[in-house]
Amino acid sequence: MLGNRLKKLRGKRTQSDVAKALGITRSRYSHYENGRNEPDTEMLQKLADYYNVTVDYLLGNEETKNKNEPIDLMKILQDRDNDELPHIDGVPIDEETAKILYYQLKAFKEKLLEEMKEKKREISA
Image (cartoon, rainbow, N blue to C red; front, side, top):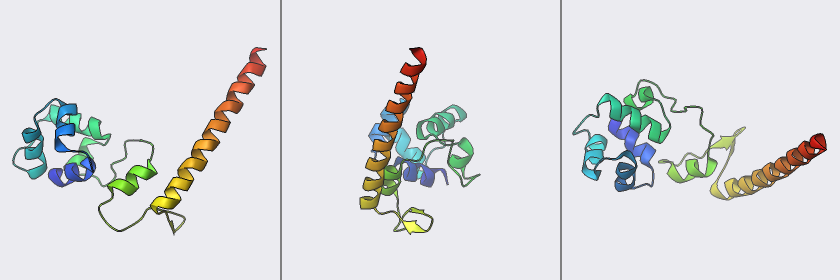
């Protein structure tokens, strides 16, 4: 279970990149993914922190990997390993739609931040 979860979480990143971030060799990380070695408790926590999931998720004790992290729609689309698309209210979100949503949300966020700055200036004045 651990190896499969690590492979899925790694997505398009290389084993070398992940190993470097964790401070271990690529072969050691590869052994974790392929089930040849089991990480100790400290390394399990490092892996969970790196992937922003719980140790229980890594070990297969829970299905939800979310550790209260924001959802990155573009990452979900790029890292998915099946043909099932994410959806909103039953409407599938393909990569083109995700890009449109991303830019609209980004523009909304920038407008909102500008309005907040303006209100802060008004209060300070």
